[in-house]
Amino acid sequence: MSELTTTYEWKSIPWRKLERKVFKLQKQIYRAAGRGQRAKVRRLQRLLIHSWAARVLAIRRVTQDNAGKKTAGIDGLKSLPPNQRLKLAQRLQSGWSKASPMRRVWISKPGNREELRPLHIPTLEDRARQTLFKLALEPQWEAKFEPYSFGFRPGRSCHDAIMAIYLQVCHQPKWVLDADLAKCFDTIAQQPLLKKLNASPFVTRQIRAWLRAGVMDNFQFSETPQGVPQGGSLSPLLANVALHGMETYIARYCKGARVIRYADDLVVIHPERQVIEHAQQLLSRWLEKMGLAFKPSNTNLKSIQGR
Image (cartoon, rainbow, N blue to C red):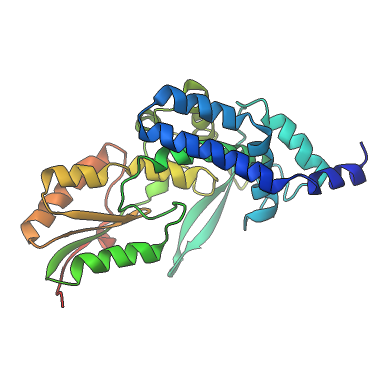
């Protein structure tokens, strides 16, 4: 098969038709998850992961659509020509695979150039496979996620979180716990996360392989016994799974308190200071089970006057 032929084949793929097919499967997963039909969810997820449509869409997203498409992992691959994309689609058909170590780079934190945070970049093949698994897992968790969680979710943005906070504080004085989590992605406990994910053995085995793949930093290998690699396609969804349940937990013990979260930044709102202080203590214990903790320098208790 010549490169010209494979280029034509890749460009002639009926993308709209494949997108509709994948979306139909995702809707079925969402509805089954909403009804609590776990066996059906797992069957549909496996069907989606092994489908040709989902595989080529995941590869297109990683190699053509994403902003990091020209960022290389430890294998040095930055992009794939059409013939290599089709071969990768065949390799993804095998489902489970051993994960390669990630390449660690250090970048400045937004608003603080002196503080650096690690970014872990998987290989192109691992990114494509993670994107494929995300297509299957995301609709299941969208059926479960709490209404005031806004970060890294389809159809939601930071503006939605801002509006939700405004509607809570605009009418009367409120006390607000403004909190940030310390090194959230780097410290998430992996075993509690996998238990909470409660996926099929096939999916759990693959995600565990990614979490424990290790990193290469300046030709030095390090293991990753904890944390979720910030930089992987699946990582934002896994972080949201780790933090899921916070709203329900606080609502149970602090009547009237509202938790609004955007990724690892959150606020707790209530008219009474004592309730907010109690909520902070409860959340500290809740987060500890996931290996997480508040960042003291970015966690404040404030009073906001309504209109």
